[in-house]
Amino acid sequence: MIEQLSIPTAAGSFDAIAAGPEDGRPVLLLHGFPEAAVEWEHQVATLGVLGYRAVAPDQRGYSPDVRPEQASEYGIDDLVGDVIAIADRLGWNEFDLVGHDWGGAVAWWTADAHPGRLRSLAVISTPHPAALAEAMKTDEDQHLRSAYMTEWRQTRVTERRMLENNADALRRMFDWKVPPSKVDEYVQRLSEPGALTAALNWYRAGRPGGKIGPIEVPTLYIWSTEDAAFGSTAALDTANRVTGSYRFEMIEDVSHWVVEEAPEAVTSLLVEHLSSH
Image 1 (cartoon, rainbow, N blue to C red):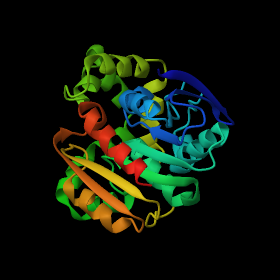
Image 2: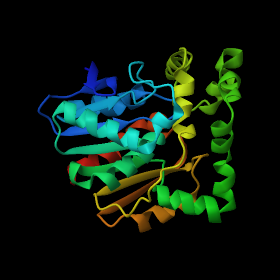
Image 3: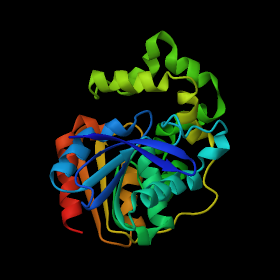
Image 4: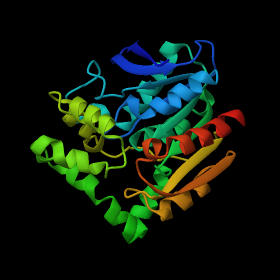
C-alpha cells in the first residue's frame, strides 16, 4: 500500500514514502528530528486509503542524495525551498502541509512565505516560531526545555555521545514511546557516515534572518501535554499568531512523540481538518 519514491530536485533526489491515487488531493508530511519519513507511515497509509495523495519525504540531510556538508546549507530558507521544490516536482500547485517537530517549524515558515501554495496547514508539537521565541525569553520553563538546542549547536562531540554504546543516548530520546523497530530504523539511518551531523546541522545553521508573521492559512495545531520540548506557554500563545481559521487540539498524557505514540488520534484529527477545508 505504501510506495517508495525518489523525487529529483535541483538540490538532489529526496527519498519519500507515498500512498493514494496520483490524482488525489495532495498532502505533504514533514518529519522531525531524529526521525524520518516513516514516522508518518500510519497517516500516509490511512490518507491513501481515503483517496488523498500523501507523500512524506526524508528531508534535507536525511535523504542521502541531499546531504550537503556545510551547516550553512540547512537554513530555514533552504528547508522551505525544498518543500516548494518537492511540490513543484510532484506537479502540486496547491497542497495541504503537515509537520511535526522540526518538520512543524518548516511548515510554519512555509505557510508564512508561500501562503498561496497551501490549502491548509497542520502542525504537531511545534508552536508558532514567534510564540516559541517569546516563550524562550519570558518563560523559565520553556527556556529550560530548549537548553539542549544550545548544546547541540555548539559541539561536534554531540554525535559521538549520541551514537556511543549502541546509540544509547539517541534511543533514550524516544523515552520508550516509539515502537522499538522504528527506533532501530532511525538509529540505523543516523549511524550512516555523515547522517547524524547532517541532521544536527538543522540546529547549527543559525536562526532565521527574517521575522515570521501571522499565518493566514487555515491551521490545525496539535499539542500533547507531556511534551518535553514544548511547554504550554508557547502552545497556548500560538492561537494569537494565526489570523486564518484555527483549531487547537490538546492530547492528554502523551509525549512529544505523539505521531507514533497516538497515531489513531493524530490521524483522526488530521482527517477532520482536511475534510473541513
